[in-house]
Length: 467
Ligand code: SAH
Ligand code: SF4
Ligand code: F3S
Image (tube, rainbow, N blue to C red; front, side, top):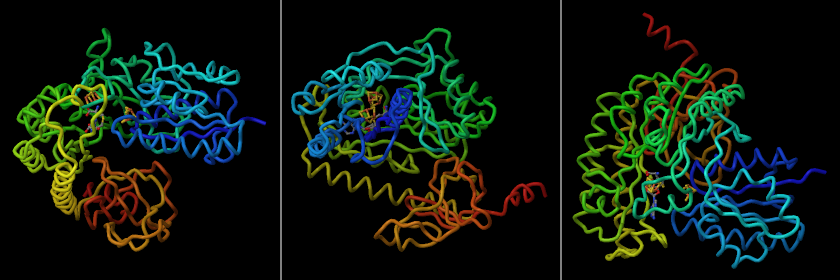
């Protein structure tokens, strides 16, 4: 009987992509995927290290797995991902029953490591050059969007961030291999590609013979059978005419730019070593808005970076008001041992971080709601993700009211994403739409977190446009 495995994934899309690659290697070795940790022969935790909370979650999960291993001594436990890369030894010391520890750069050695754990613990967190000679095996989760990593690592060393230590130096994947991977995903039925990298728009900068990021987008825009291209994350330092021009011209590239600002204070940005000022950032956004009218912008913000004064924080609120983001990911600064910001003077008290967090959250909710209400009456193209699962009591047409248990809502309610990456809940008459199908939805209601509406009869929009 073949062995069964379960992967528990924490962190960002890059980790999810890695879990799909790990699944590819394991299935090639004869393992079978399963969701139930109770019945698994191998459980892997693909970990994140970005904030302290992410690391604590791993230790509590390992505590739970220890009990499972007591019941089933043949169970093998593995820890991989960013936290394993950074703290492999600490994990090994604290958890005698972990059988396998490997880093973000050692995934391709899995077949060898699996044989090794039959004899005893295996630990490999070495920094190695990536092998880009051929496609790694990958078993993607169901669609409609396929992750494709275009670069590994990060050379930016922002003073708060662990990623350069957990994912190593930046390497661009050869564009020929990216094209090959996308063609394979399209053959599998994926119609949207989500390009991944810590800094996608520095693609090719240090690799001779490769296009720039803008050049890569133009090349991928020609891929047959592909309908949408998204990417994440763009760094403001490398955002300019090259990428924005390509975003404006390429039909398949979606009208959404995730451009994390982190702070609105020049002094904080300097100490974060982000490489831009607030004004430079705002100028880049203005260029995007001019070239891609109606495009959505989202951002990441950190509150409570060491030394952040009330005046610095006011600057962040000012940039938020000026930027009018569609949405943001908001974080309280979390000191990361070994990073320059950890040792900086002026660590901000938790209460001040909480207060600033709430203020940003409140302001952003107002902006998101206003922007989404402004879309009422418009028609958006939605890629179907499946039937809507929502909280009982949610009002028709979207909205956030209600609460309680998750349930499949009334038949004919579905969800999907617009090109600008809005989450759209919609009513659909007729035979259920397929995952990955494109439907035109008239927006009836915009709320903080989504748009609600009704699918137009297929072809209706085209007819209207033709007259
Ligand atoms: N490469 C991306 C971000 C990767 S990490 C970029 O440069 O924008 C995702 C987000 O986590 C960051 O944008 C930042 O907002 C947040 N983050 C990173 N380190 C953090 C820390 N120590 N404390 C709080 N938030 C952090
Ligand atoms: Fe971290 Fe900065 Fe690299 Fe983003 S660009 S991963 S924030 S070091
Ligand atoms: Fe992602 Fe967390 Fe690593 S955010 S890159 S999994 S530290």
